[in-house]
Length: 287
Picture 1 (cartoon, rainbow, N blue to C red):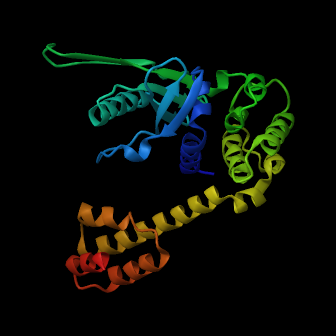
Picture 2 (cartoon, rainbow, N blue to C red):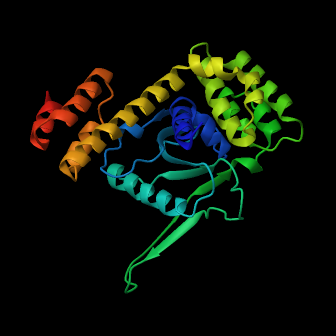
Picture 3 (tube, helix red, strand yellow):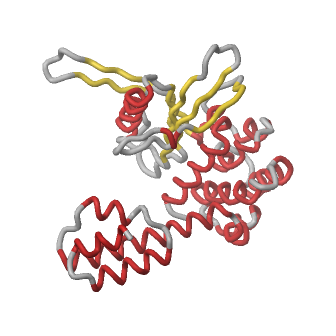
């Protein structure tokens, strides 16, 4: 598993079990929720997740921004602030923000701050923002398991548990088998493995969660593998173009990276190797 696999798995959990992630941050009494990420349009980096959440007793829904980080990272505070401002500019609402940190850094004691302030050079203007930070390793596995919320289970291997990992992963497996909807069971087992590998990095332990067979059968992992293969082909195409013609215009590179059809990618690779110039390649892109 790579960090990209964890990123994709985390985003799947946001889209399918975003309410469970909010519960990790202490949000209660959720009546309904839906993902808004696809509705945020901006040329820069998108937030990991954006949810519209109706909380009991509130007259209107609230907007929650979710950010996932594998290890505590010094750039995360600025990233959260930028995305809060992005959401404000896009929707006219300053969002609630939750940063979820999966694992403590192997070395060092850096902790992601829960606020950040900016000031203009002359001091005329000042901006300060806050958010909630959740460090998974500080949470109790027993509490998450007792919640009877299957959307919390993939995060359980990253939390505090005093017993052996075999027992913990077996309880995760039982919870998913008993509580998951049939159409989500395989994906939940797969993403739980992805998170568990970050904590234990022991392939033998993963057999408790279905091992390689679950990873093969999971639609999410199949989609991820297809995307990884396509991304490799994207870079092959752009490398050929760069070697033949020098710098590749950004609009061509961006257009190549939007294509995931294997037959079209093979055609583009052949065209990159044989086209007369970049304009001929651009014409092939548009066909």
